[in-house]
Image 1 (cartoon, rainbow, N blue to C red):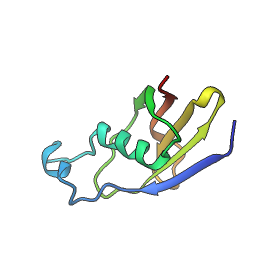
Image 2 (image 1 turned 30 degrees about the horizontal axis):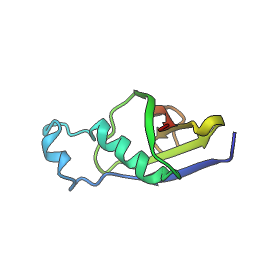
Image 3 (image 1 turned 90 degrees about the horizontal axis):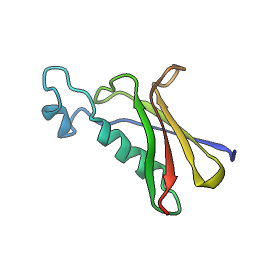
Image 4 (image 1 turned 45 degrees about the vertical axis):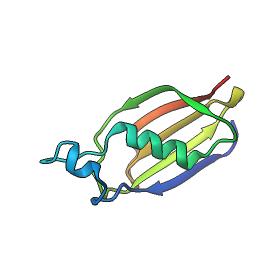
Length: 98
């Protein structure tokens, strides 16, 4: 595998989804976390989700560390964790679009 990469980000509490996605206990929608993943990784070509597991909810304003590794065939394995915690909130793999 190639070198690993990491990036810390958050979805602000002012993001429109905070008012729409469970207003009494807002969580960041999984689709928005995947959008951020694609934007941050910024691969050379188009990618699609091969697999993803959402393991724990992410709250708006919460810092999340995205880390990823590129493997053979252009497959990218990634995970998101809260900084300082080893247990991921999300794991997945991306593959190049043929």
